[in-house]
Length: 180
Image 1 (cartoon, rainbow, N blue to C red):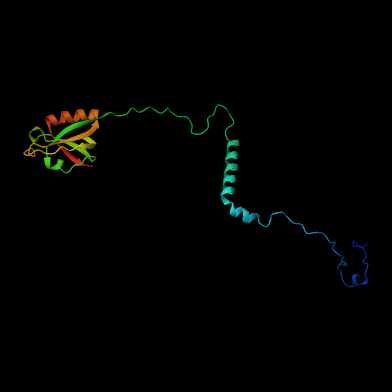
Image 2: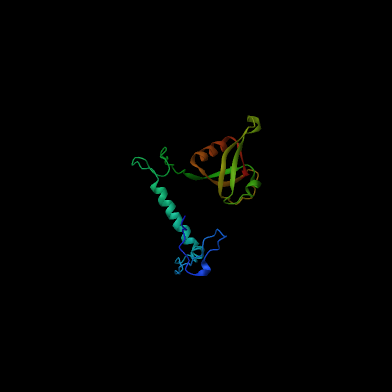
């Protein structure tokens, strides 16, 4: 069987008869292969990390848009549900209220939030119920001398319907406040 290797030109390259290795040959000279910028590509990517992240996000967004729904009748984004009802603004009014305990009113300051409680007279059953929740104190007029026994006035900002309940309750019950 002929040898797959070409015959050697020098006597030192002749294989030894007892070895099974092929004869050595010269490797032709060629210029080195250089990849332009390959060595510094990772460093450059680390330096421009924000740019790389932005490019990745842009590619991801483009892929999501391309893979989105294809039908023209389907809408994008949140599915359409019941239409949102338009909320009307609640009209608030300032309601002057006489609180039975004048000393309690001295603790109040404009901007405080209070609950107004109506307490029935003990002879009428003695029930207590909350008339207004979270009413904002608008004004606390100064107490006049000798009026502590008859209560004190406080001006509250409440919705119009609550103001009507306050007026109705003040005619039949004693009013008290609790700070929220």
